Length: 198
Image 1 (tube, rainbow, N blue to C red):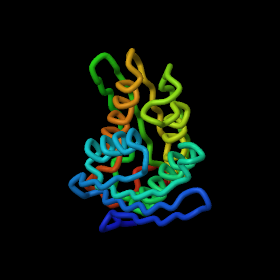
Image 2: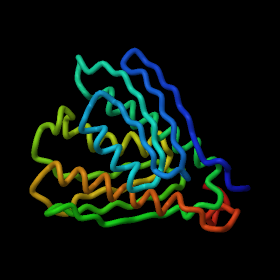
Image 3: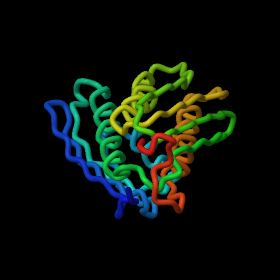
């Protein structure tokens, strides 16, 4: 097993609900071009790219006349699939990452294991119904869909905070920093697992 180079992934995903093009580069400088039609989702994905150091390009046209659900879910699916493609057999990576991130009064914790056992465990504790046109229930769903399609485990918990915008943004930033650690090259060629595979 060897480290996949270059570590990038490209996904085109078209359904009757969304049309998405997604490209990522794990070793890119964190450049981003994100257009989902949902300003708040773009803002969160911008934070994810900036703080993970992963270059992300996403263009999505979705059925926003219905609501935001399909766009949020399908963007997460496409991004997870691109991440999975970029990781290859996951040789040479650190595998685990974790972070605790404050944003004003909000504080969030995220932990990631890039083994191929998918699971999203998310508690954002949001009180509002929506932020910037994105239903708050779909923000938790974003992380779960990302983990399912990316084949990894993520735990995201907002530990405190009064402002829901701050709570969500600190959660995305914590996830970004955890991802930065987990995808980092460890300097070894093998897969970081006692099983010999991830």
